Amino acid sequence: MPRISAPRLILLAFAGFILFGTALLKLPYSHYGGISWLDAFFESASAVTVTGLQVVTPATDFTPFGQGVLVFLIQVGGLGIMTVTTVGALLLGRRLGFRALLVVREEMESPGSPRNVLRLIGQVAGITLVIELVGAVLLAADFLVRGFELLDAIGYAIFHSVSAFCNAGFDIFEQEVTYYASDPVLNLVFVALIITGGLGFPVLVNLYYYSSIRRLTLHSKLVLVPTAVLLVIGISSVAALEWNNPATLGGEPLGTKILESLFQGTTPRTAGFSTVSYEDLRESTLTIQTVLMFIGVAPASTGGGMKVTSVALVFLILLSQIRGEEDVSAFGRRIPRSLISKTLAISALSALLVISGAVALIISDGLSLLPAVFEVTSAFGTVGLSIGDTTKELGAFGKLLLVFVMFLGRLGPITLFLALNERSRPKRYSYPEEEIAVG
Image (cartoon, rainbow, N blue to C red):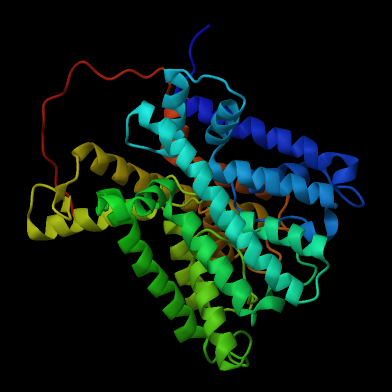
């Protein structure tokens, strides 16, 4: 029996788990009043890819069991299916082979040796449990103060802590999240969980050990610096463009304006929650949010998108060209040429996917340009934001297209193409070199 490559195994694992989730959500005790196979498939794909785009309303359409299935799918999808199954195998006392560790390393995009990945898995599981537990405790306390029953407060807290940390964007509030726009505890806890989940597990592990090693890796620096810059851009743009908009921030008190600016400047980083109506945002705000969704978060994190490290490398490539330098460097380190080629390929594939997907939605569902680009970018960045009820109003083709884009956004275009080209072999020859005019 031929061995399956790591990219193809990851692809098959995610696809299989989406189908498994579809079957669970289609069970009669998962929903009220019935749900079509297509909608169950869409919700499962959205949960496993931690996107948050929805064609139903989880708070009213799913039973507590169905909501439990959703949070389970979100947790597995956020951590990575191969990572979760590896942790499960370890808990059951199974030994892991070298090949299994290679697959997990591929999924986690870890540059270390496969044996070090085993230690990283344990650290990832521990960090995730602690962060989500702290978030759940804080949210439960807030819900109790708001008058929730104890069991309800615990259930809501666990669901939303997992959803926020995994950058999933699913909520089960009976009122919309906009109802909590002035709640400082909920806003600040959500923002903290979203940012933490988006940093990526290698960065979280590096930060955890920073007090003893006193060193940040180049990867951590190229995640933390762009993340800080993008957060400032997101928060300040919402505040500047929506401060006097009577349909969004304009009519709110100062404290709520600040919280909404903070929340909506953070959530496009692939989280998908919103405390304002996106139908009422100005086009300039939506355009900036679209760019933020396209960039996404860090590699080996709970989110999708082109990734902040890729954007950082594109910037460094441009900078080196402007300076006339042969090498691309950052923080006293030279970037390998193989990574530069991969970054440019990711950039081109990501842009091509969003453009072609938007054009397809315009043709199939008659959307105008901005809603189509926003919807496809939200799916690619595994964000879950939507302008009004755009997602729910899509036809079958539009929903399946978004599932495909969500799938690609979570796995990454490169992983998909490597999986499809498993049998390709490197060339043992090279052609003569010849220059062409560019630019």
